[in-house]
Amino acid sequence: MSMRKKIRKKWTEVKTNWEEIPKGEDSITKRMIVWKYSKEHKEELKLLLADGMEVADILKFYYPETSVEQMNEIRKTFESIYIKNNYAVN
Image (cartoon, rainbow, N blue to C red):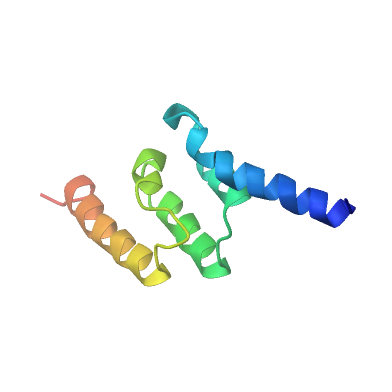
């Protein structure tokens, strides 16, 4: 078996075994290693983290099939709620 086929086979095993990783061990880093994300997905992720969204909340929707537009809308909603609740001037 060629080296390329061995690597491809190993990669398939990693993607298949992803479902077996215990939930407590899930992380953004592991998802970025296992799945492919576009540059735009990664930029939205940076913005979400910079805005202070909890990693546990990001993991609820941070999947390759979640569109950048959906992530952007989630971020804007979070910003409006977070800013309103935490930085409101009385």
